[in-house]
Image (cartoon, rainbow, N blue to C red; front, side, top):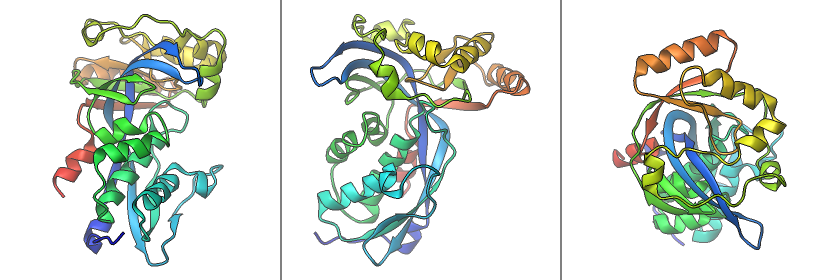
Amino acid sequence: MLQKQSSKSAWAEKWPAPAKLNLMLRIVGQRADGYHLLQTVFQFIDVYDWIVFHPVDDGRVSLANTIPGVPELDDLTVRAANLLKIEAGCRSGVRIEVEKNLPMGGGLGGGSSDAATTLVVLNKLWGLQLSFEKLMTLGLSLGADVPVFISGYAAWAEGVGEKLEKISPDEQWVVVIKPECHVNTKEIFSAKNLTRNSKSIKIADFIAGQHQNDCVEVVCQRYPSVRDALVALSEFSEARLTGTGACVFAQFDSKQEAINAYQSLEKSGWRVYLAKGLNESPLFSKLKDW
């Protein structure tokens, strides 16, 4: 396929890969292939990784800076770029520079968001013109959370997380704690005592206050620091687990309430983030201006 690539100035841009929160997570069944059937709500927050894409002439995909312990070919941005090349028959190359701010194993979707930004932006930079539906299909093969980052808006999700319906929950202030542990998602979903038969609910039920996360009990049993973080945060507001964790979060009606909680928890030694809930992904806000 022949592509019309973007100008050098477009390549010099820094592109956001925002974090997400699961505002609730219900496991309502399990497929024959082992994948769990979920109901969850995704919302973005204004904490980001940043990615810069550098054009290269040799057709290779590489990283400017590798993540310790992650082989370059296993990095989700590299996998996303190579997948895009194969799908589009693209011969272009890229060197990917990631400024990593989102914690790994935190349930904030950092790797998935990085992959989504890579697919969306390189589709533009390489002039491939693949549809968002095609990009979401490619993204799903990289991870269940990737499609929501490609869709670009807060969503009610079902299936394994790929059936998305756009919703607009309140954009509240948020305090996030990252405990000093790395939760293994596969381990949690493999646990024998994980709830797998929650009753399905409607969006209206979530809006009315049904915020449960079916992974909480198993995660807290196996990772005491997550339990401790939930206890610490619950002194200020309803504390919840995002995804399988390790991060926990609470929403606040005012910025000052969130700041007060943030400062208190930081003084107590927690690794903590102050953020704002966002229904539109900052990646797509930036794309509108391009």
